[in-house]
Length: 167
Image (cartoon, rainbow, N blue to C red; front, side, top):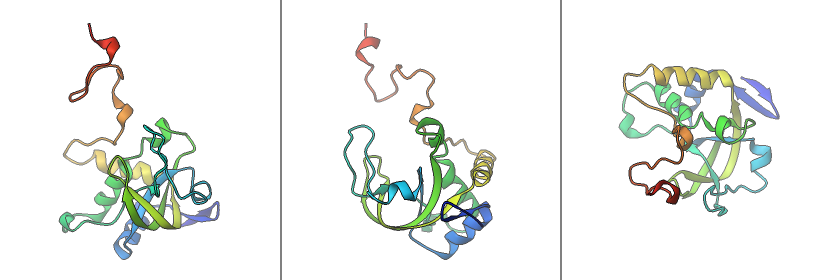
């Protein structure tokens, strides 16, 4: 593990996997970092602008239903799900691991976390490794990217077309 901006950096997926098997209450947050996030300890809903009662984060804790499957695949999937954020939000967005308490759920059903203890950054190489592991799995899976469609004006199932799309 290396250190940057007063936090160590998890430099391998194995290192992060070991942590997840030893400790509960862990989350990954994609942001510009704890120095920017912790003074407010609040996220903002992008759609409405509402201030949320905690930082949005993705849980890293293993679920019982995962059973005896490889923990590396679990961790890889949790990292892969939001790996698109640096491209769609802000190039300075980076993943970091934290320990905290879930206080509520956000509008996308994501945990909102308080009582935060930053544990470390996640190196780019770990995200690259996670993406490789996920794409090598037999099933189809993609990151949770709302901006993935090539035509943002086209109607999707369950969504009404925009006024300009109607004839």
